[in-house]
Length: 309
Length: 320
Image (cartoon, rainbow over all chains, first blue to last red; front, side, top):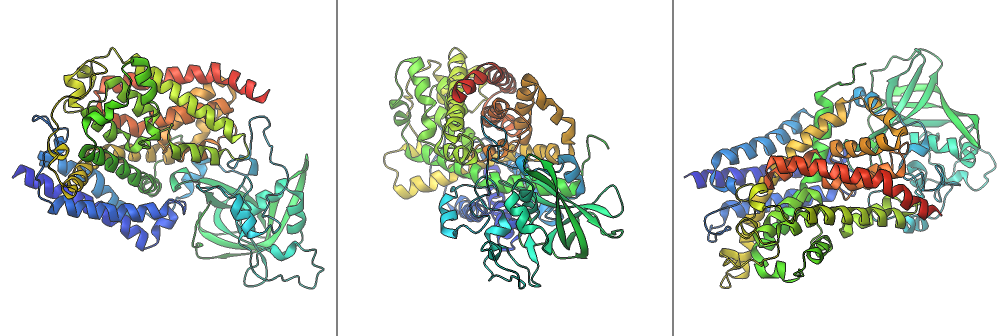
């Protein structure tokens, strides 16, 4: 009876765990938690847990797993331990399914501190010199997609170190030069539906260290989507995105300071779309500090991928 | 602002992320364990190991290249290998080395350090991890497994205290020659399921603790430590223990600590896969608490000394 109860509980634990993983994948919630390259493993894992749980419940126990009466699987015959496993593994995951808001509040941003220097992002430094990466990432000004793809490593990657800024990398729309002379690189700037240049927070930070990008961005009407975090003055705030390497647990807040013409009243960490211009103030050594001058600020829905990679 | 600011919203988000990232790896480890139990005869495990203590431990440090399991899944595998007759010291060496000396980690470390002398950083991480694992393995050769293994963990190791003896107990069940492939496969899945449940409990507790530390503690309290080589090394090892990252992906995190010197980040990459909050609980499946604590302290001291005093010389040589 004890063995039967333990077996049922363990089987339910495996099935419940598999169900939670599959549920997060099917609902698309997993996108908020993991880097894309880890997501398929959650679905595969969920299916594997369900298969294992089914076999565990259905299969006839015809073999002894352990020798001479001293079993390493103490939970196998102990329903209390099986119940503890259910309580520790399945109950919190199920509770998290309902209680998690699939995002952080501002306290995590404050605890972890902002990254406002692109050199603080992954893979920007080398053994010998603190800031070895010279020149623009190959894709930033429109390197061939296949060429960039071949330069990508097969594992989870950041947005730096040879990879182009995300928004620039996905540029595919036809050029809209607004009557200006196209110098050949502007066509690669991504555009929003209203024709504004659509950038990510990371793109603006790349501009701080890349003069060629600063030239591309300066003077153009730019649209940035991110989370609002208040600043020290009523008309100043930060627009924040979280950058993850593997999963949300390692997320690092990336922020660009924004100046608005008037007082801004938006809920902390709510998603906003800001339209304005990027100003770069030279800080020496070929670098600059970006300040985004906001002309319009409006609430918006979170992007499909709330995290940057 | 307080240094500790707990929020359920942040906890759930971080906790679930850690669980989703790590559980598939725990399952892989349990499956490897189940397959070993059901398909690999005891003699096969020890056949490849030389009789000499030193050589056997040196070989065990490379087993991760054959059974590539990260630290989340290593405990059930090692428990199974001990059960199959792997000498205790070799089990410890394999357990500590496998999360670093394995193909997935080699690839991910190389990728993470792209543009930062990846070949050197990957090699230094591998060699450091291998050296530390073998050193610790050799240091427990004289330890009586019965005094450090929990009851039920690795019967063969408990019953044969001779370090290099080959398992001679008759293999029951899955090792039975009469068992069909389907029977073995079913047994492998059943064993993997039970191993997963044993291990998963501790993984989830570790993930919960890590989620609290990850989200509730103000990192500004910790970061000023970066300016001192000794403090930065020890604090990075502390970070790695708290963050409880998977060794297949921790290099991507390590490279982000750019305010810390490279040797401190290397300490992070060597210590973390060998001992962290999650592993403290996982190792408790296999070892008695006192041994787990001693193992953690020993690893902290050894890796700290190597990172603070030897690795700077290595990097100076590399730069030259």
